[in-house]
Length: 330
Image (tube, rainbow, N blue to C red):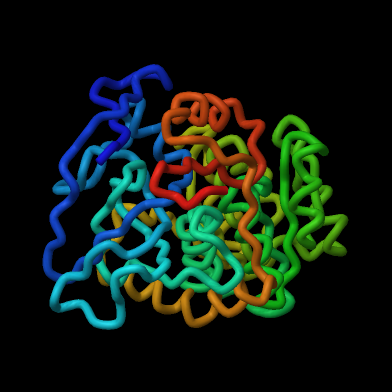
């Protein structure tokens, strides 16, 4: 099979397409013929040598994939060869085949093809983990989502609305707010990382009950100024740095709860519980069109370096997909 690796740390030019043996299907696993995978910022960090895969996980990049089932371990019920499926993986998504723990596999919703489905797993499962599992988002909550035009940000906007909350998103430019606003969010231009007053004005002074932060240190001071009583803050990414000054008195006064969350390194049992929960809640909504994967562009697997370049330039809205030669004709 063809697969993408980064044998030496570097820029997009460090990526290599190599021929590897098909993965073995171990007990509890399903082998997926990959039609498409999707890029995540973790892939850029792995390519740069700053985010190695967990122990025992393949060096092949990619945290999600979609396609059709090619083989099923004898101890796995409920799946059969030829079924469309999408998967959350700890690595291996940038390949023509990937072995997936059965608990991390989801059915592809009706009316969604197996290429489009690759835009779903990481974004929507991360959003569901943050908003439901951790922040326990409730109807009427004001939810502030940073990096609102990213794949996770756009998924979180839609999940928040379906949970009965009111989503607000930040971006550095007004142009990048168009998509989240079309999905029902109120956009806030965070000029020079300043946004708290605009949020307070938009919420009648109430502030944010939930903050989904994919930015990190540069936004921490403004986050602290925008907190509602009982706020839940979920840190998902640190793109602007991991260190900043924290006013613990402010957190104490606002009765804040702070979560640090990553998905890749979670246990298989946690991921299986997350997948089961989202499958019950989210797949019917995806089938009905109440949740929609947002795709910026679809490129061929051979164009992986161009895809990485586009993602790191931060002009992307939604997900970039890489289509393999195993996908049916477009």
